[in-house]
Length: 294
Image (cartoon, rainbow, N blue to C red; front, side, top):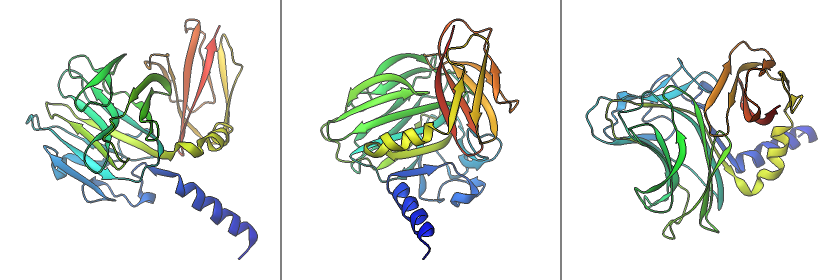
């Protein structure tokens, strides 16, 4: 076999060994329609086979996503998938809710005995965001309220060696919490709601070996550059991929600005001085950079 092909094959194997990506695309074996039964996904409780669907009408990346609708039965349920985690696992996903003031949402990862490793909870009243702290059905409140029909990127890094989990929203640190000593693995994704009138949509799920991320993250970030930074009027984006949209968040995770023109520059002259997170969405991926408006 050609040496170049051998090298590509070896790199592909190494990437597969420490990463799993799910964006519900046709290239991954997904088809539009009912999610349960596809690629290891299943449903439980109040989620019926037809209420969890692969759709192509909205997506945070690529063309497809999964939406779970509500029939207002008040019967909790969810969609789950078994995965392979690591001693130190970075887990992230894009997620949006259809309404505030109705259903409550839990996005958790569990071991094989259903013990919660870590996760997020969105309260029904005002969309308040909580993070799990090692106690089932308990959490620690953050200062963030989640808005309806807005994509957010949720991320946690679970370290089973130190039994700690660190939480992020749109790459902004929310803090760290303990993992219960009874947790023995990183095995099951579980997206849950109490089915009280509103549903959710999810996309861009990533499971990575965090112990191997230092080099790969540097290579990933090298794909994009933003300049000037700091800046007072415009930000230019240097990237080879086609830009689908640009989003700007404040440091609380609130979406401040969204541009879908496809241009590789954006005006920020009207923003207040301070630090912000720039998210660039392409057909292939999504990138974030921090910048300062002065």
